[in-house]
Length: 392
Image (cartoon, rainbow, N blue to C red; front, side):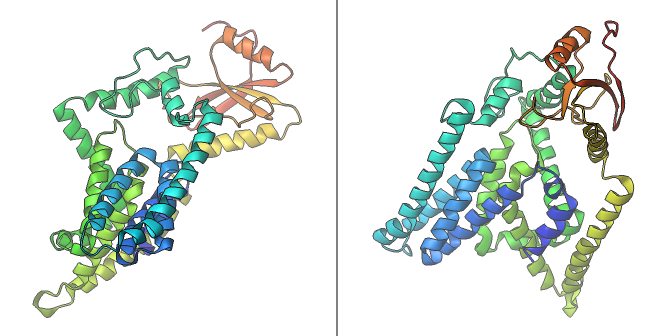
């Protein structure tokens, strides 16, 4: 059941299975870490220690901050275990746990430092830090100060970083704003990971909370949610590291609900069957929505851009596309992105910056056919770029 519910919900209902922006890797890593700890406490075997280390490495490379919070929770639980009566001898812990986990993390750390050095020039500076320093105004954490000197060359980029990100950060600086934004985060988490259907088993939450078998899972989840509250902005995959916690709570709720027999009637069993049947049926309903309604504006925009790109790539000539947005354009509906080898690409995308700056780009890409794409979300009108266009 614990494996079926994520497959039904996240693989079919969410952006995790239909985009590059998802939390499947972090969720897998969190499950490895959360699952390895109780096994280590029971047997302290090398295999479980290596699975723990693998999960920590994956967390460090997918959700570093959230992975650190979860890793600290696991480290605290493991420290208490080593000090308890049921812990094996110290030499066993060192040989089967400390050494393999330490060597694995050391090897991964060296590899990551080399990657950072080759990418950013510093072994301790992550590419994401460079991204935030280059583009972001709002800091990632609430205790940091905003980058007040940030300058943007494009209106649509400024709209995103100022209106979408900075506004949220500023609201969270007050007690009331922090409480409201935290409530919004919790609502998003509920809607993404649980939803109305899987809320039914959560009516047994008072019994679930008293279940000692998952108590440490709940503590790890609470610590991770507290860490998430300190982040300026939020997307559901930010809490992907504790996906296993959400699933475990729902599954335990199902177990308690299934045993509910008011006046000897198997009401709980009927509710469980209805919950699972509805979860399965919703997969087909979701597929129908995607097939008939296009799956939303972002998906429609992506399909339209792909259509335009195929049309341009069919030509034997190299192309340059200048994209012009409307003043009210949604910055999340982005048309301008390129491959790693921009100059070698058959089609290069760039934002319209006005006649003078456009001409500089056109001269740089001399020999390419130049187009102007006037975006009307989610479509675009493609026309030949007029080199003598009057100033706007």
